[in-house]
Image (cartoon, rainbow, N blue to C red):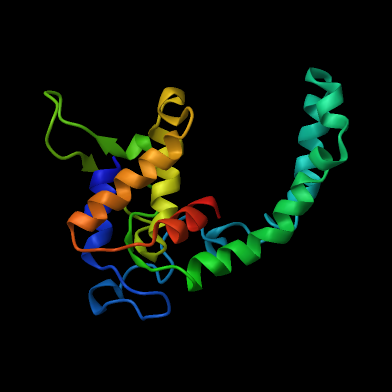
Length: 181
């Protein structure tokens, strides 16, 4: 629920490069399970090998697609960009309190509709880029119909609109760039 995320994020919104508010000092310095400092040490260095194994396993499904050099090189390209993107999310974005693992399985909605969801599983909460929560929520909760056409942009615009209702102005171009990172 992006409105819930926007309300959470608005509470401790901090400009890029600023330290975490004192209230967040006992949480992860970099919130999110998906921050590279929380991932297995060899995960980035093994992306190319892992991807090539995936391609080999699925090549029979679409031989023409999986024979393309650009497809074969996805793992290597991801490996090269992972550290750059992680650094960007940690240094160039506004930061705030984030849930850190904001997926659909962690939302419990009232049976009768309306009202606030209950959100569980906070072990990765900390100070971080709010777009980590937004991207994970969108891609674990939204239906394919929600994403059709300009669906992602509509969902991001709704998140930004609700941030604005809470006094937070977040440049839409920067938000979309960080979301895509």
